[in-house]
Image (cartoon, rainbow, N blue to C red):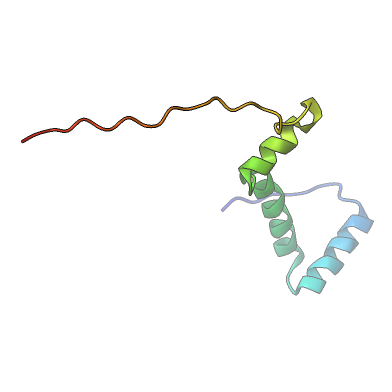
Length: 83
């Protein structure tokens, strides 16, 4: 497992981190691991609802509610294969 050293961390931030770790019942080191894990995995995970994510993405461009859907024909019967 890798190690990471953080230099020049402001004292008030370190103190808040200590308090936060104590509140969660673990060490400052574990608190930092959990904070980093949550921050990195947040960017990696796909959106929970793809339709909502698409609608949100295109909302500023007029949305996706008024898109026309092409008409479709009924499916053809599959060919019959005789043995």
